[in-house]
Image (cartoon, rainbow, N blue to C red; front, side):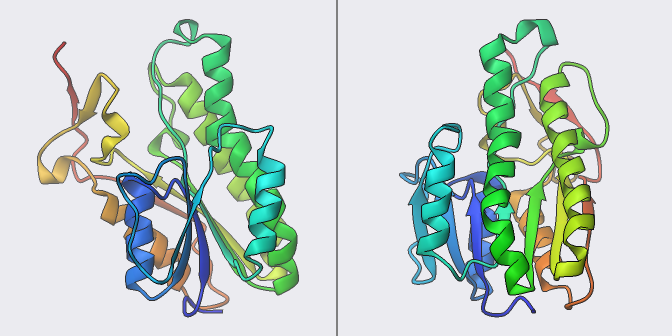
Length: 238
């Protein structure tokens, strides 16, 4: 199965990297089902785009919602798990609720989504699952323990599913971007450098996703580590 005539589910599609991936896929004549919590600021006006409003942090609702999504869209053959958020600080600065919230959204919701669609992808005999990791999935850093834990776990999930799915024709990969100039940093105390070679843009990550999807059948790109030429962190003034 090539990248032609795909029906692709993208989570976190309403902004940032997810929005860029959605726009890239639509530009490549793919059908996109975009899941997001709020599309008020980004709603692609395109015949091949279907908007699904869903809060992936509400785990109690997700099994039923994912089942309905699959039944309503039986032609979905690609899953791009992009939704997530970042919160940073020393571990003791996190409340138990904050730790649970990050694990729920960044990890558990992704597992539940893949679990819902994996049997149909295997039965189909082809398809792609792409997880959105991070450079934080490759190396832990100061004040990033909880975030890195979720991203390391996603990387382990991708590697395990890669082995589990190889015989079924379903490809599984993960993209690990460095710092991307998006609204991810809007509520954080730091941001990537402003020079063009000191940050990625969302379109860079979208291009990496497309590279995975457009690989010939039988070839799987397991992991892409994507970084700006220079690693520069700017701390915001209070």
